[in-house]
Image (tube, rainbow, N blue to C red):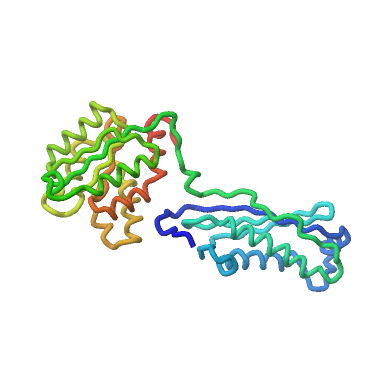
Length: 302
């Protein structure tokens, strides 16, 4: 079973289709309500719904997930019944197997109910029609790589008594997203130095993105949010809210972060926590959705 614990929840939708080939007379018997066991369509609809909700019990590597909706539609052709299913869930993994299982169980149910007087029936196809909501659906692609810097704020790391791990994680994470990291710097927890460095990145270098790590806690030397308020022109509360919400599901300490995010000029500045776990969780929460912000800043809207 694949580990999906680091994924974010999104609205997942999948549509599938299964087809049953049968005699035209059998289709007419359905329309005329002449099937001895009752209305096969209603039974098949219930069976499909149950199948979608129980897919993880049938297919070993499917994750149990909270199904929000199962829709079942029937279409009649010349000697064909098509069953189309739609499954929705707000979760970390897709629902295509649920939609496929629902469609297949629906036609199997039809087969079971009508097999006594139509021995020509044949399941002739099961296929996925579409799926949405995965990570690739939220990936924003740019013609040229975004230009970024990573800034580490820590007295101990700047003094050489401690090695930096969080900043390096950010550098690696940005490169995985196709972002060019032009500078990586370590400075002490000093408001004036933080302000000066951020202004240099935004006003002089005109970078697209600056990610910082450290200085977002409660100690007397944690001053990153205060430095941010001195230089950002527009604050973006939703970015740190997203990282805290993601982290809070994994540790009760996420709510203690005072991180901020904002825009200065055409540069997006995002504070991340100082811990390795905090950085990892924040990167998982922010990408790929964060990449869309540059399109918005450049006038592309949503």
